[in-house]
Length: 297
Image (cartoon, rainbow, N blue to C red):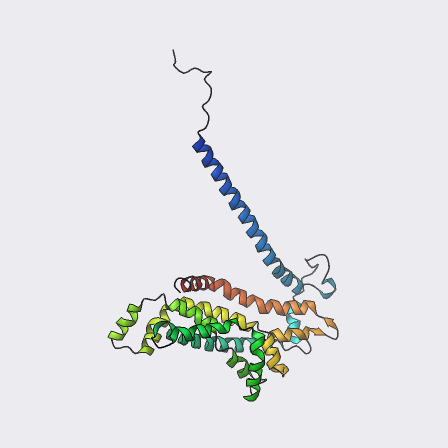
């Protein structure tokens, strides 16, 4: 005869297993809620971009309607941007890229030199000077605009590319970012290079700068994109239409015939897409440069 009775009740699940199951369900619900929140946030960021691209392909008489999808995709908007009366899209685009490239080059150069001095060299008052330089980040840009404009006027640099480039060639933020990154590099590398007879410049150029590549890439992306879309300072400095940057040129799409939304969105799309592509391809280096720069303060 079997010792196990068929009528024996099933033993209840132990309390420990119940607790583990409830903990798993809580984690699953939290992860699901987080994914839903991130999805909604992503959609809120993507929808304006999608509207911009679709509007750039929409005929003028359909712009502003209830339907986002045009009845006919109009590629002529992109062609008309280059031939519209009073619109020098190619010239303005070149001006923006030229100024942003020049500013990026000089800002990365000056920031890396200053960061090397503040992080690797020993001199009296170094940390106090760095804090003073860092304090300039607290000053609003509008506060500095009037004195900068007066200086540019006295130097005769108003309505010149040099006036836009010189004032943006120095950055306290760039110096701070690269300094924090360079401080993560072991000082033993400097000592080894100096024992081999390397000068301070050789240590900077051949040792520290190559190892700071992620930080340099991050600063390059920040600086280039920030200056490419700069609006207010070029608006104040530039007087000649052929020297305008593209963000100022967008104002010309509002003509006496009304706002040319289709052409404007086509121009904005051609302006934004290259920046988005650059960010997508370099986002790993950007994140790595920021993370490594934040390791040591």
